[in-house]
Length: 308
Image (cartoon, rainbow, N blue to C red):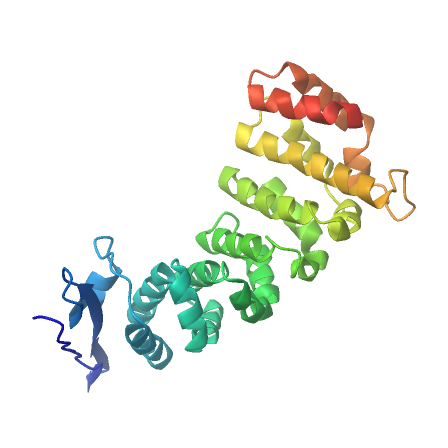
């Protein structure tokens, strides 16, 4: 007991026969016992490491072994469980840096191209947690184009689409990488208008990030957007969506004011977001919301009203 350390590791083994493959592995984990220091003991199985009852944080040695396993195995079950474990551990800031330093970001990033949709989703979720770290974003940005392709070409409202949208939202919290989405703005509005409630909310979170950056304003206003976008300003729309589309208008208006060009621009063609937001129909819809039942919606409308 005391402060002594004991390490137990059962290496991944491979049993080949009749076309079947069986892989068993164990990780080590650290546990603090009173004030006697840290003691390493044999970890639980892979299944225990990834179930909801396992709440210990893996150390650098364990993460390295997990990354090696993820890189070396082709078993989809093990890959998925390893990605879940890495994703859970990447929620902790200390492990976000450790995984990067161990070369883990490209190992995880390569899995977003996997044909298995569940593995693709888990890889995106892990990258999403890793992307909270600004230094990690520098390495993750190379996957933005692939993530956009998956979001726009994959099944609507799918787990992969939502995971991709969450990652793009995290990657656009700062202005550093927003320019990489310039060519995707029209597609984002298409997903917004065709997706379900959860998808709409996630797209709006991403668009709100872009709308706070004056450098993205022109790109947003140039986007070709179906006229059905204005239906999102109707009073019956869910509050979490309505507040966000009102804030989108507010942010864009504020950026236009900062840039000093509130007049109609020749680059904003008919059918663009500019013509929808600054047309009379949108103004009427926003004015009608002044009588909305929800206090937050009314407050937001009162803030916007002088600007329309």
